[in-house]
Image (tube, rainbow, N blue to C red; front, side, top):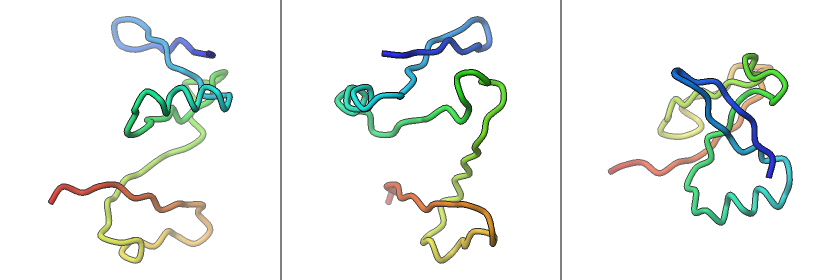
Amino acid sequence: MTSVEVKKQGGTLRHVVCDKAATLLYLANQACIEFHVFLSRVDSLECPDQIVVDFDPESADDFPPPAGVPSGCGTCSKAS
């Protein structure tokens, strides 16, 4: 399984790099509820290529994306 060392305050830690179908199956089998993916590539950890903003609108219609900006609408469970 591929991993990468990432700097953190006071040291480093290792993160799994999900670069193979077998790794994804292994991680899914760990009963992970949500994967928190790193938003940069292994060779440039300090330079993310993505940004995720979670606004939690009531529905997808409540927050239309700006024209020309690639986006996706995800769902999550909401405490009642």
